[in-house]
Length: 433
Image 1 (cartoon, one colour):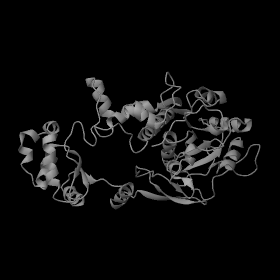
Image 2 (cartoon, rainbow, N blue to C red):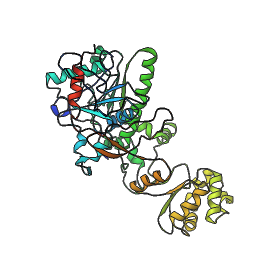
Image 3 (tube, helix red, strand yellow):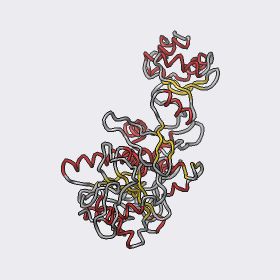
Image 4 (tube, rainbow, N blue to C red):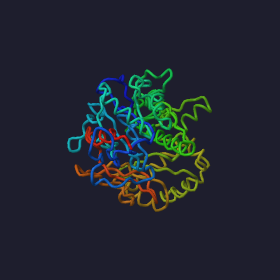
């Protein structure tokens, strides 16, 4: 998939973005600010039809200085849960605005996928007035998130130490490719980290070359890790009043996401290798060819394997000593596989799916993305919502977690560049008195 971490040196107008911190000396967000200070005489509000803040993170202001995927994905999750997210972009906008095809109404679907529920302002850090606005945002925000190269915001007075001096309660999250020590100068794109972390070495067919995952999975994992860290830091701040500096990086998130593979290396000294669609410790756990199409089956224990074999018409297999336990089946998969292939050939993948699902056997066809969305809809997961404001409306995937008391909100489509610049500038001009 596409890159995440900004590999360019910050400072030019194209890669300038702003950050935020956490004091509460002014109106807490552009959505509820009223201009009372110098510089404006009208209310600085969100669109007239924007509903009152809601969600478990209502009242939390996030200054989003990040671009591309990991940071914006993190802040979209926070925004879904009620946080007020100000997306600060350079005059050229987020890189992903230009990552096409595909497009929707002329906008890159990549950008649209991770930027809803945010307000956009374009700031040029080379301009003194814009930089002053960035500092003011930093003095008001609860959370700052950025993915400049480590140390890149220091020249603008927007690094953690400078922001903390303005607002000692700030939760400041920095995302990099390889951390801020010996790897601080390395560009951190998702594809690069999939390669160097070892993820590509365990992805693909055994006889082929290592391949990347079909989506920028390291960016997504890093975004999730960052969101969890921010929420934990906010909880700590609510208990102690103390902010802190969070440092996430793609390589550490990739190694964490490799879970059993990194554990295998640490505990045995041996690096796992590619096995295609097979599992190193479990069988059957792979796609099986059928009369028409392929079906993925995961029989994770002895009971499931016996139920599977009964349904396939080969009830004798679980009593064969070679296949009597998970360990034996895994060790003797080359003997078991052709026996299962022969049995699966009797029906189509859809027929087997219908039969085995009723019996509680984990299985499923290899769907397209569209078919996956349609399946979620048929299963009552209500995966799609319409996100609209007074400018545009579009279908988007819902937040993945449902809340019984504080449901996610969908109030703003992904913004055009500087769409909310005027209202945010008016809000930042207010002195909060």
